[in-house]
Image (cartoon, rainbow, N blue to C red; front, side):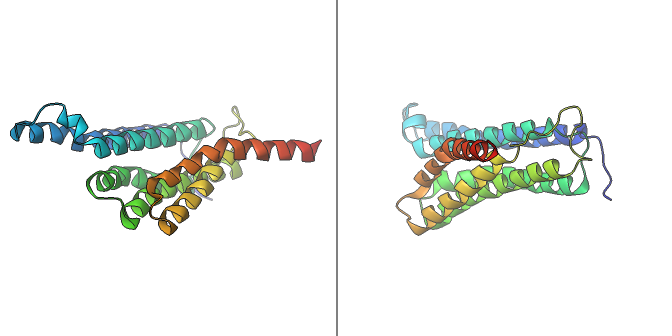
Length: 205
């Protein structure tokens, strides 16, 4: 049996890495300011001349925060971490740390199958690993908190997001003109979860 350990240090370490990744997102935009000044261009061009970089920064910021909030929600139900959960959490952090790199690629290079696939693929890996962590917590009674039981629909959200991201990646690669708009498929997450809950309620009635 894997050794079980108290989760607070793991949570603090994870929060610190996520905070660093979020900070790294803005550094390319900070570098734009002296670049514009050296070329004696108007200050407004820091914004108007770098809109793709700004939008990708905002998108990636929202993605990382959303993943972190989901991670926080999951670990509210953890009383001890096992080796599988630790390994999965570490791989998830790797995907989070890679996201600023893929964000910079999107901001600097024109949209292509490679840049689109790299970006959506990175988010997909992070979401998939998050779903795996949820499954580990849900399936291992020694990991899950006894005082704060795991809800029955605990895994639904992360699994739905992972599946929709997979579809987004397939669409983006199959139809390059769609590009990052394929991520709008994530808006279906709410309706899909609602339909699943409704179907389950009818089945149990």
